[in-house]
Every structure is written in structure tokens, then in C-alpha cells.
Amino acid sequence: MRISRRLFSPFSSLLTHKLDYYAGIRPSSLSIQEYIDFGRRETAKTSFVFVRNELLVRLANIMKEMTFLPPKLLNMPSVAQVNSWYCQSFEDLLKFENSEAEFYMVSRFNEQLKVILKRHNDVVRTMAAGLLELRNAGGIDISNEKAIQYFLDRFYTNRISKRMLKNQHLLVFGSNVAESPNHIGHIDPKCDVGSVIRQAFVEAQYVCDYHYKVCPPIEFQLVNKRKPNHPVTVVSVPSHLSHIMFELFKNAMRATVEYHPDWDSDELPPVRVTVICGKHDLTVQVSDRGGGFPRSHLDRIFNFMYSTAPTPLLHDNNQPAMAGYGYGLPLSRLYARYFLGDLVVAPMEGYGTDAYVHLKAIPVEASEVLPIYGESSRLRLTEQVDTNDWSHHLPVLEQPSLKRPDLQCR
Ligand code: W6P
Image (cartoon, rainbow, N blue to C red):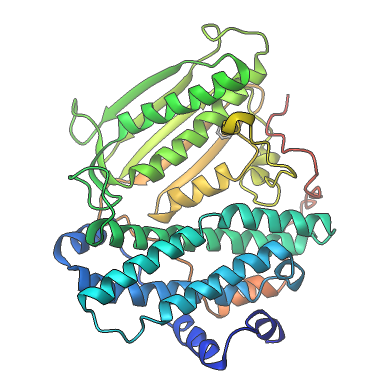
């Protein structure tokens, strides 16, 4: 209570009341099919009514969780900054709470959404800065590291979902223009998986060549079990898939190149990509022969704390950084899980690594996974439920070190 009052000090009691009200409503999870139907059937006005309410609900649900973060973290300047953006956006949306769905009101709402999207552009980077501030202040221990990871998974999932809602609304009913007339907002009902993956490979190849002057080739196999000899298409958000694949390719390429120093591109073992489209699941397997790493390191490749590099090693000339310096993998897994897919990494130490991306192949089955604020999430954030009910020695977790994360282990 003390925390929430401090955090929302600029907030009137009315706003605090509204926050509690909207945080008490469960977010409505939509399936990809529902997003499509919505885009086809609804109007700018009905969409306005739905999006206005749903954004307030999703915002309030995560803002409420934020108040239960360790106070040490909440007090870090960058985290306070992020929090103030959230408060501001909540207030901005509340202004439309009782508006009639008239044309000019809907366009004002759309302009407001654009302002909010822009305001929250740097949330991921700013939260990362906040974690660094906490680390430099010596404020991280294992118990709150777990709570922080739990929170960030939910916080970023929530962010992905709100941006999806806003973008769908603006692309389908606003003046923003979709990538193709066949798209429904960000959704491509006939997403050509093979071409998205190849494009992501080319982009990763560019980054890899830039960093290492060499790059392994790709070996590509695509099997359509549903419609043999047809291209694999799936109803999906191409930007999410391409984000995930780009990240996986950078990791696979980096491992391959660093495991074979001084080898030329044409000598390097290829990154093998296998795409299988089954009845329910579409699976993409990415195999590298980059030496793998011990299974005990699996936790840390998805750990936000561990992946926070002290100085993001962004390259000069605005070139994107190579794998391993950022939130690529943990965020990619959230993108995959957002519509009930997954990202699984399976290392074979001494040889290489397999990564699997699973996506729902059936649009009605692909529904949003959204964090819901409640007693259970509050407990996970505040109680240290560190059960010790197995006999093996619990691994002594290293403090996240200040050196850059080291995915490789030879
Ligand atoms: C590695 C580490 C990794 C992470 C994700 C995907 C592929 C790979 N390969 O060595």
C-alpha cells in the first residue's frame, strides 16, 4: 500500500480508484481468428469502444503488478520513468472513457494512440537501464531476481499485446496503412513461412558478415504435411515470426563462427532449417554446429537480468549488435508464447544446438496468452516461495556478472 501511494503520488484518488476498477477486470484474450473477424466485421466506432476499454484493462492489470515489484527496483530512475509513462497513458485513455463514438472523437482517440505508441517506444531499453541501475547499486539477490524475471515476462507480454491491439485498430480502422491489401492489420492470413524465414536469414547474414567477415550458409527444408508439395502458409503475424527467426539465426551463426575460428564461409557447417507444418503445429527447427553449451546454462539465455549487458554493445554506424548482447532470446520466446506457441532451445554440449519454434497452425487455436493481475500474481511477486523439496544440491547461482553474457562454452 505504502509503495502504491508513493508511486501514484501524482495520481488523484479518482485515478487510483479507476486503476483498481480496471485492474479488477480480466483482460479478454483474442485468438488470431477473432482478430481477423473483428477486422472484417467491426467498424471504426465499435473498435474504438472495444479497444478503449480493453487497453484500460490491460494497462491497469500490469500497472497493479508493477506496484508489487521490490521497492529498490521501483526507485531506480529509469523504472520510475517507465512507470510515469504508464501513469500518463492511463490518464490519457481515461479521458475517452465516457466519450460518444463519434467520428471526430474516434479520430482524436486514434491520434492519442499514436502518441502513446511513440511514448512507449523505448520501454524495453529503459527497463533494461533500470535493471543495470539496480545492479550497480548492488541491489540484486537471487530471491528478487526470480520475482523480477516473473514480472518482466508478464510485463513484456502485456506490452506486446497492447501494441498488437493499438496497431490492429490503427491499421484496420485508422489512417495507418497495412503492409499489403491482403493483410488484416499486422496479420497475414496467408503468411508464406518459407519466405519470412529466408528473409530473416539474409538479414542475420548481413549482420554476421559485418561482424565476423564470414557467415555459415543455410540449408533449408520445408515440408507441408497438411497439403504435400504446397508452400507452407499460416495465419500469423509476420513481424513476430521474423523477429524470432532473426534472433535465432544470429545466435546460431555466432556460435558456428566462434566455434570454428579462421574458417571460411564455405567451410563452415551450415545452419540447418527444417520447417514442418502439421495439422495443429507449425515447427521450425534451427540446428547449428556451434559447439552447444552445458544444459546448466539454459536458464541464463532466457534470463533478463543475465542478458543485461552493462553497455549495450551496439555497433558503430548504427549497425545492429550481434547475438547475445540483449533481450533477443527472452523476448523472442515471449513473442512465440504470445499466441500459444513456444521457443525451445536444446543444446548438445560439444557439438551444437537445436532451437525449435512452435506456432499454432490453426487460427482459432492461436489465442493470446495474457497476464492477469490477482492474488496469485501478487503472491508470486512478493512472497519468497523458494521450495526446497528435491534432494539434489541446488545450483549456486552466479550473480549476473558484469562481463557480457557468454553463451558459448567450449
Ligand atoms: C548456441 C546458443 C544458441 C541460442 C539460441 C539458438 C541457437 C544457439 N546456438 O550456441
